[in-house]
Amino acid sequence: MDQGFEFDTISTYNDIWFRALHQCDSYEWQIGTDSKVFTKKEFSLYFDVGGDIPVRLITTRKPDKTCDPNDDGRDTFYRKFVLRIPSEYHPLYGIYKGHNTDTPAQEYSITIKSPFPEWAEGGLYGLPNACTSTVASPIRHGYKYFIVTDQNINCLEVKGVGRLSNDNKTISVDFSYATNLSTKERVSKKFIGVKQ
Image (cartoon, rainbow, N blue to C red; front, top):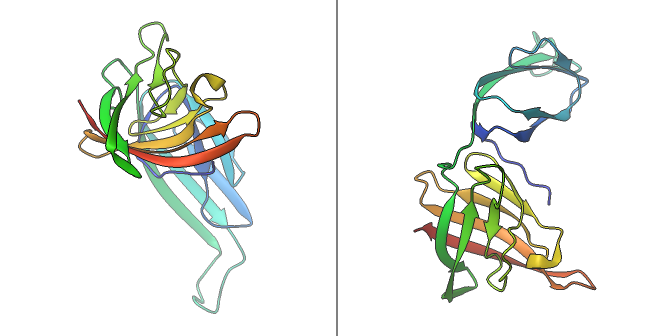
C-alpha cells in the first residue's frame, strides 16, 4: 500500500517519511536543530522526542528562463510539524461502533488500544468483523492516522489505513484482508465508525 498523508501533528516513536513533491537536480533538507543535511528526494527519520520540528528544503534544478527571466533554479520551502509523546489518552484509542460501507446494516465494533503501560496489548482489535482473535493486529500511528499491516493469520492478514476526523469522533478505515490464506486472495472494504 503506497499512501502518504500531509499532516502537522505526529506521534513520537514513529518513522517519519520526508518526500519532495517534484523532481529536481538536488535536495538539501534541514530537519529540526540537527546539523546534518539530507540530500535525497525521499528518506525517513525515527523520532523519540516531542516538540515543534521545523523543516527546510532547498531544491535546485535547471532554471526556466522562458517563464521567469530571473529564475535561478533554486527554491526554498519551509514547513513545521508537531511531535506529541503518546499516552493512554491518545485521540485514536477507543472503541468505534460502525459498519462497512457495502453492508451498512451489519454493525460491529473495532477497538484501538494503547500500548501503554509497558507496551503490552496495544493495537487494533475486531477488524475485519470476522476477526475473533484476542491478539491485536499491530498498528503504526500518527496523531490522527494509522496503518495496520498484520502479517499473521490471526486476523486474516488485515492491511489498511485509518483516519480520525478532526473532531476525534469518527474513524474511517480503508482495509483489505485475505479471503484465502493459501492463495493470498484479498477483498477490500471501508469501515466507518463512531467513538463510543
